Image (cartoon, rainbow, N blue to C red; front, side, top):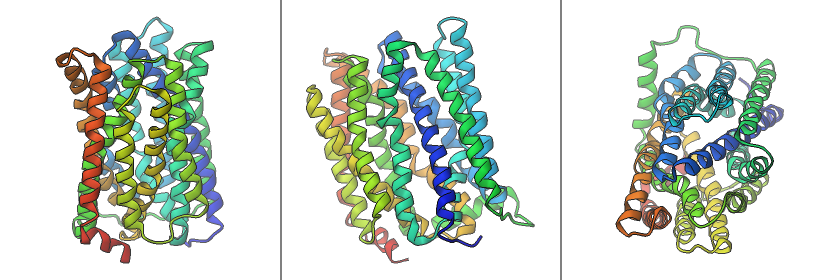
Length: 410
């Protein structure tokens, strides 16, 4: 496919659809998390919801990446986005018949995650299909905005909706966003010439090639492994941040805290979307992660909502610099025709840390709270603070690895 500046308009349309989809998904995530915490009061139950919404998607990333290089990427996006709404629909039907049981919520979340696996590798590879190397940084800034929308807009919107209605309205709105994003992907698909291999290799051979392009570059492999460790610490914050705030505040305060904190990501994402990063991507990567860790640790050091908002803002404001730089360093070192299967492996390995965090941090917070006789709030606080300190340490270690720094010279 010939890459031209005109393709940026197609990217913007596709991005708008994912932006809206992210808000819808954030509404459901916030609403279901609050629903479960109010019913059980357990951080572990909230963490299990997050794990089930993430694990199937992660496990299927690698085969989904292979499919993205073998078939129409935009069509795969439509299928993944559309069918993932079935899980939300299942939960809605259960709630319309009365209070949904935990297992029903968990099952619906799992179904949604399974089909969502088709989306990410195809979406990431489509960005490479559409844009030139010079446009990557700006595009990544906008992608960060879409990703932050589930934290920036969804909590405050969900808080308002729950004040006038209940979670069923939130689920209905989320289901409607699936229709919109499928339509957008279809429109973009019509304007893009699809290039698929005429005589594709076997599925497992294609998968092997994806692994080979990653393992053959020691800098990329080291970066991905370290990123997996980083996602472990960030996953702790994502899960326990809500239970920490809810331990001393109501859902309205939680919505305000999440929105205020996530506005940090909006500010820097807009900046990157306009200006982009021109050089020193490696430095922006490790420094962004280090300051994110500092913000995470200080977030959990007090129960003052104003201080929490400040350091939450700091945490989210630094993430786009790290994400933008990580994406750029990897993308420029992988051939276009291998982008789908490579990103499938990259997503799988780098996000294994989230699985560990989602599986263990809720139990850890509950256990620490019981051992200290202070409750789940203090248990969450201690766990988040420790993870923030670890993130700072790992980031500083990364700054000394020359093989990762060399990726910028590709």
